[in-house]
Image (cartoon, rainbow, N blue to C red):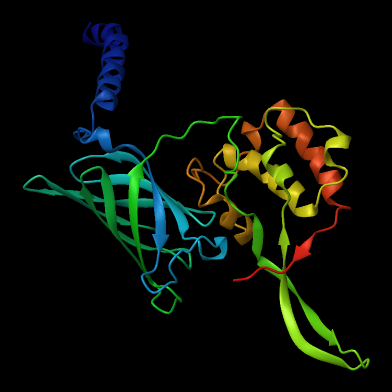
Length: 294
């Protein structure tokens, strides 16, 4: 009789065990920390420079790099963020401290990249001010400074490069021998001067994000014109440029925010068509080199 009763109760015992296991799985393993200072979440953007570097004097070769720190989550014990500079995107983990209303951060990159380091940051008014120290002290510039303002990023197809800037590729030049011919036919070599690639004003007129370009628009353009028009598309999407040439053009631009390393999935149909056309013309285009006083 007892054996029969036990067999009858067995299904109920098994169901009870399953419910107990299910309940135990749903119980949290620890207390989830509450997020704090959500007003600090978002992109903080500004110049990133070494104190020993030459001051920026309007020449884009001397332009400071643009740093973007994206603060994603803050709790009592942890800060999760991301740094983007010179086309390099790195995860950041650290901690926020508060002392008498003063907020400071220590944020560290993982250390698996040659240029990784540690950010020490203080919130002063509406600005994040601080220093970055490289883990590898043998780098040319192992310590850099920055001042970052909070900046929203939003794609805008109508953004253009500022017209008041002279667009010269200071990172690419060729040396040209200067020759002086006297009246008696004597030829003197005066030495070699650097000649740099320059862009025309067409880069300020052709918008490859807003208008479908035609072959007639591009056939007389310089190679640098075509490259800048194409990369302005990427800049509008927040592409973080690795190549020095394009960092020099876009980092000083107020609207430009380097956000990520790949924007292929963000491109519009018009932009994709224009990029193909621009690439075709770039393959055969030539550059205009000129001398500039520096």
